[in-house]
Image 1 (spheres, rainbow, N blue to C red):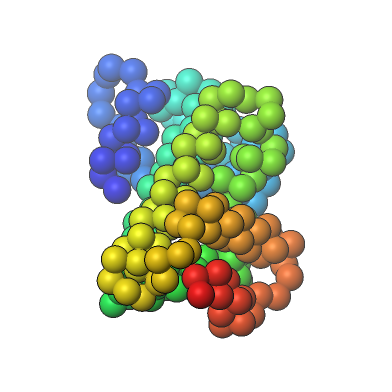
Image 2: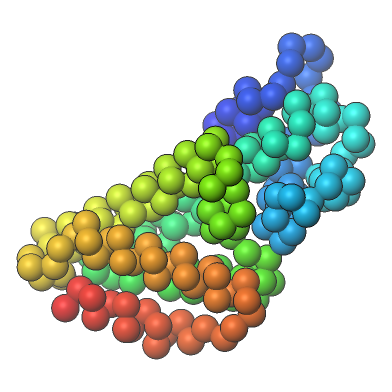
Amino acid sequence: MQKTARRSQDIAQPPGRPREFDMDTALDGAVRVFCERGYHATSIGDLTAAMRLATGSVYKAFRDKHAVFLAAFERYASVRREQTRGAAARGANGRERLRHVLLSYVEHSQGSEGRRGCIVVGSAVELSAVDPVVRARVNAQLATNESFIAGLIREGQADGSIPRHVAADDTARLMICITQGMRVVGKARLPLDGTRLVGVAMKLLA
């Protein structure tokens, strides 16, 4: 987390005296409002309220709203990456590790977090077609997630929990479609039966 915060600061921090606020806490507030409202519907006023900073402090720490968004995206990606790896660590083999990852996506797609939405999915829909910088961030994050899932499938094939005939890369791509679709369904406030959905998804590994 600290490494991510330092990278976020590097994006926008000019030389001068140290900040008087915690970067991760401020960015967590920005993440919440960007997830809820999207990029274009979020004003600087929304950000100052969510980040609990004065307008001048936001502009001192970041060049503009776009810079805040990029730092918030990076913070979100870092937190979700840690959550996903933590979920995988609960499994005893590749198959179980992947099942726990899918269950984690269901969990984060429900309740208040599910209604808030995913900044990656939101960015893909709202900005990827018109903002090449954001498009690159979205594509990189999806590729990272897909590679992680493919790695779990190959791990399962190595330990015998997943059949060798399963196409790891193709199945990982389909799993990404499923997990990102969960976030869309959660944002739309539709119910998700996690056990049933994950059970169906795991049949891809039969």
